[in-house]
Image (cartoon, rainbow, N blue to C red; front, side, top):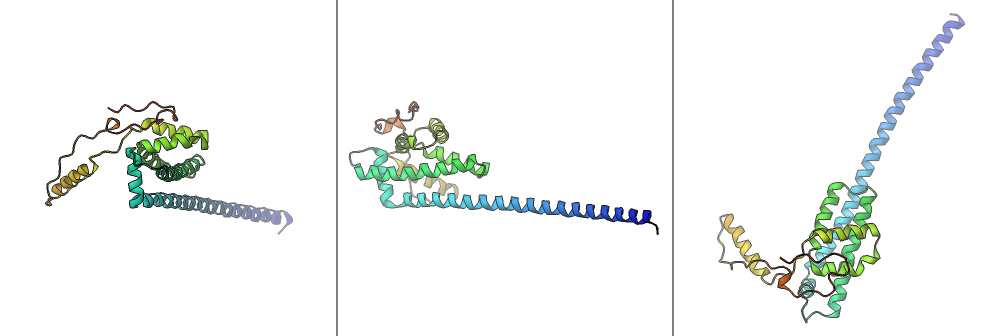
Length: 220
């Protein structure tokens, strides 16, 4: 075997080694990409769990009898509202707004799944139907980034204003009676619900329109 043959064999072996290295590198990069995707999914899951935990804490607080009574006094804007009630509700509202800001900021950084953000946006818009939360937002909006302020202001402009209904219990009982009847069960007679009233049914809250720069929605 002459030198030329040895050189050819050496070149062939070198070529095989290069191809093997490239194949190994391909599978290694592929594995790293899979691991990176799994890490991103895990991170999103942990962040979603943290957001859910915060929301559940707010819901648990709202489910307490003391908070429900205070919230009803605030919503009806009656003479029995105290300064302590206002302070407690303001603290609750700040927790809602700060939780929303965190979710909004994570979404801008690409850390929140679009479907999760859509659910958050719908839920936030629904909550902003209450005049007391709108008033609180008008008092706290200067604390937040312009992007988040514009986002919440848009939700406020899109959400219809809904005031506390004085016949809420009657409506609930009527709807429960209908639900039980539709399932084939028996239910005691329930009062027929009166038409739901909006802003004309409650005392307006002074200053509700001015902080947000949005016209107050038509009560009709």
